[in-house]
Amino acid sequence: MISLNEKALVTYAQAREYVLPDQEPSKDQERTLRMLINGVSAAFEDIIQRPIIKRRVEEQQDGGLQKYFLRYYPAENLTVTVEGRPIKATLYGDSGIVVLEEPAPKGRQNVKFIYTAGFGEQVRKNGELVEVKIGYDWQMYCLQAINYFFNKDLAHFARAAEGAVSY
Image 1 (tube, rainbow, N blue to C red):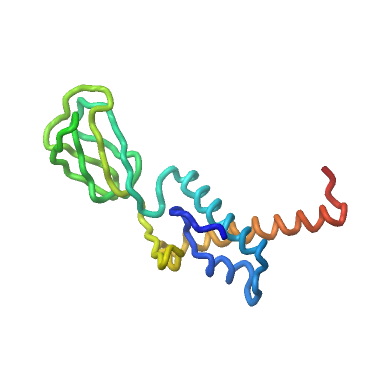
Image 2 (cartoon, rainbow, N blue to C red; image 1 turned 30 degrees about the vertical axis):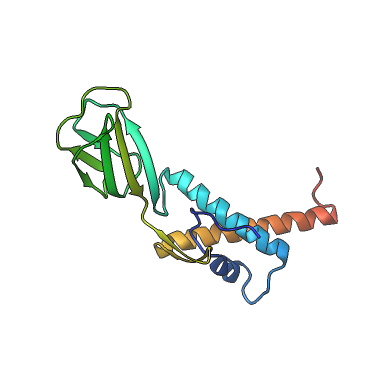
């Protein structure tokens, strides 16, 4: 069985109910749904170019500044080190702006930021994803995309089996 990864925006139960209401999926359908949940969720993150589900991020930037812009936001739980030593900083989390207590010395990639980026959370029980705490709109977009690709895939294979699609 394919497990849902750390980027999954919906649970297997949500996808099954949306795509196959009142049906018990076959093993192949279950595998396809799980692959689509992982793939569509990762694609959404790629499109917006930042984490949706919260996760730890490390990034380094060049020194010489006092104000920095984190690559991913919203952000929280920030730790900043300059040339390996901790430095106090203020994080404006929704914007991803970080203001250091004092300007960092000039240097190449000498300012390191470790933080949690994203705005959704997953709830797992015994390793299985049971709930995703994220806006309803994100979940609906994900479910609609999963439904589209699931049905397109099955329709394509059905036509291919009938000889309507040639390779």
